[in-house]
Image 1 (spheres, rainbow, N blue to C red):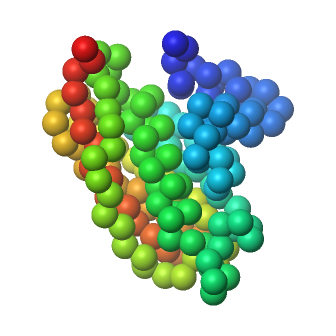
Image 2: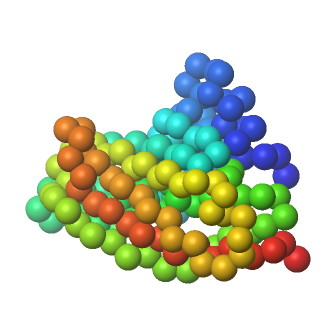
Image 3: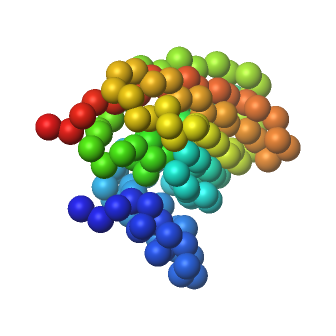
Length: 152
């Protein structure tokens, strides 16, 4: 299977390449397509994804739905771990704790940063994802527990 980071880097050199990469990811994991993510940055240890506020991801009060933000956070953390993990290891999300910091009324950007060395030890590894609105206000945080193990 091709390396996800290599695919991202190849796509990023093309016009509309980040959109193409985002669609490829959603083709591979269709549920994430519901939020129509746009990858903006993907490197070892870092992922930044944008999600537009649109009617399909809003709740009854017109703000971005909590579960849409959970999807955004899980996608950012999972993709970052996928490109940062040693080839001899695998991962699976084990749990997520979230905090709603403010009402999400605009497009959102999720950022996930980690020291890649933290991903070299089997066991649980907490990953923090911060979601901000267009004004830079943190509206949501997620602490995602990733379980890391050796590939079989």
